[in-house]
Length: 322
Image (cartoon, rainbow, N blue to C red):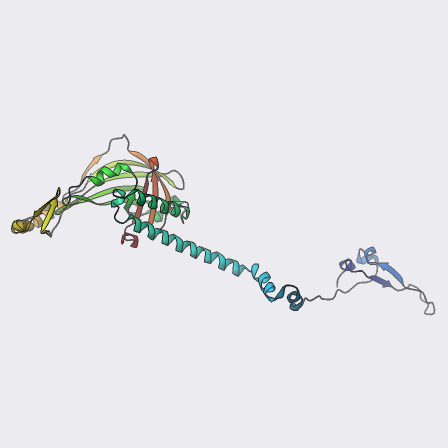
């Protein structure tokens, strides 16, 4: 049962019967405007509101079937969720494409040392695009992603260029530069591995880090470590080497080098068992900060003092394979 005021929008009147008891009296009914009845208690009647139904054809006549479907679908939670999911998939695919393009651009640059100005500009643009799509806005709140060994693939830090360029081909070269993070004990180890035809060795620094913001960490270097040389058990002797532009034929001395190989194998086992040499670092210039601007399970982009950029790839990632 609905009250009369519900019908105030319709131009109608209510018939109220006369209160006379005589059947013979014939009086005109009393006409009351609908707006004059505000409460059901003012008159002893009630009005039944019939059910109203809207046929689909009524909407079809005005908007058409496509219009109806558009109205109904525009507010559907399922359609909104599907749209959000599609956008997320497209964004992830675009990010993966940018990552692969960056890895391809880094190939052959020797970590940035031999990159041309055009290549540097291309790399810089790709880095900027990836930073705008960073899936981890607060990397220091996702330390599990930071954990592990990261291989340096590119840097604009000129302080590393002298190290990268100091090599006597083909005898000794920088084989790998890496950074290992352990967020459980807040330590960072930066390591440089040198490789030669007979051995490999490494130099590393151990540091502690403190979280200063969701993206920034403060690093304090405490110790240097010179690794024990690891001699190669099996020496592959090339037919020739080139030193300072001069090609040297090694075939005449291959027999001598082969006899040395057996001695090297036994020495390798002896030297490799020796502990590494550790030493304390001076307090001057032993602190720096690092800002992580992109982070996912494969790739990390960081910026350091002076705006230098570092691109690191997680050990084992397919991005390391050109």
